[in-house]
Amino acid sequence: MGELKIRIENEYDIVSARQAARELARQLGFGAVDQVRIATAVSELVRNVVLYAGHGLMSVQPLKSNGRTGIEVIVEDDGPGIGDCELALSDGYSTSGGLGAGLPGAKRLMDFFDLDTVQGKGTRILARKWLK
Image (cartoon, rainbow, N blue to C red; front, side, top):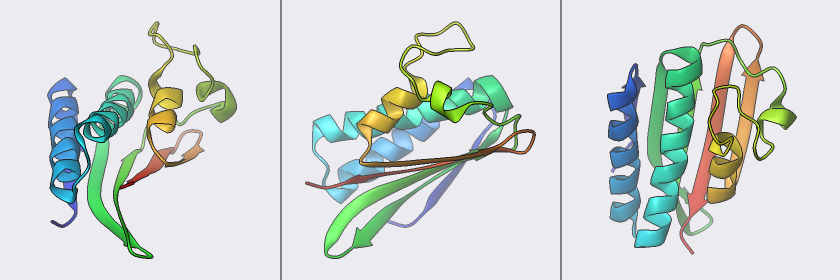
């Protein structure tokens, strides 16, 4: 179980990324509920890449720290970046006409969430979930 990378270029890649993250979570021992949480967060993050940047990369890998096991997801693109991170992470905000649950929902579903974005250069999101 090492790092798995998935190129993000279209909506089919959302499904591939979601399935890969869920399968790794299962292999690591996450229960069904946490598998769905992880898969849902990945789906939201990768969907944003398809919608706003057009293409990017997702990597998912096992995480070990201080005797704990977890999963780490990195989603990155070289798209336009996010103009206002605080606004983008607020519930109900959407620039695509959606529900506005993407970024804030993904953040809530994971134990750790770090968003790094630069206007005109892209966005990188690091998210982690730990086995309880």
